[in-house]
Image (cartoon, rainbow, N blue to C red; front, side):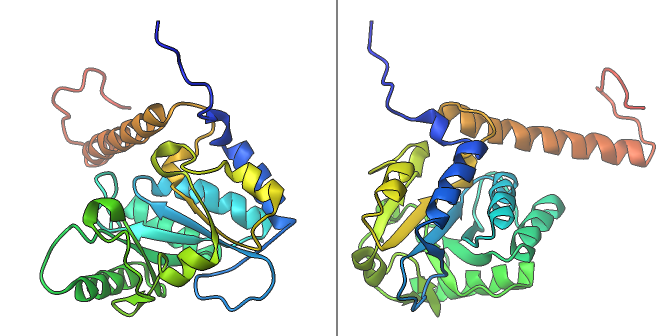
Length: 252
C-alpha cells in the first residue's frame, strides 16, 4: 500500500488558521503596499485571485476586522469568474471599499496585440475602469509557464511589478501556490521572525472554512460556480413567470 504524505498541512488553510497567522504577523510587521519605502519591519501581503472572488472577500473581511490591508491582484482571464458579472463585481468593489489595494493579475501567455508592456497597460486600464479604483501594480500569472519567471523589470506597462528583482532580492518569500507551502509554512516563517521584510503570496481559493485537500478546495470553487449559474437561470425564469422546462420541481 502506498504511503500517504501527512505533511501537506491542510489545516493551515482554514479561515480560523488564517486569522491566527494574521494576528501573529501583526505582532511583527506593518502591512504595506508594493513600492513602500517603509524602513520598519513590514510585509507585502498579496493575493492572486485566480479562481474565487468569493473566497477573496472572505479573507478581505478577516483582514479588515484585524485592521490590516493587503493587495488583491484580479485576473481578467479566469475560467471561473468574470469581473463584470454582477455578483463578482460587487465582491471586488467591496474588497476595495474595505481599504485593500487592487492590482492586475496578468497572464503574459494569453497573447493579443502589442508588446507585453502594452498588453499589461491595457488590461490595467480595463480593470481600473471596470472597478472604478486605482490599479498601479501587476503580478504575473504562472510566470514559469509563460517564460516570464526571470523578468527583473521594476514596472510593466506603467504598473509596478510585484515580482521585480528588487522585491525578489529584498524580501523573504512565502507562497501557497497549488494549495500547499512551496518553501516554508507561513506560520513558521512569521513565528521565526527571521525576515524584517517579507513577501507573502496567497491564492484565496485555497483558504476554506474547513480543512481539505487542494483538489477538494478547487472542486468546491467549481461546484459553487456551477450552482450560482444554475440559480441565476432558474431565478430569471421564475422572476419573469416563464416555464422552466426540465425543472422537476418548479420553484415557488
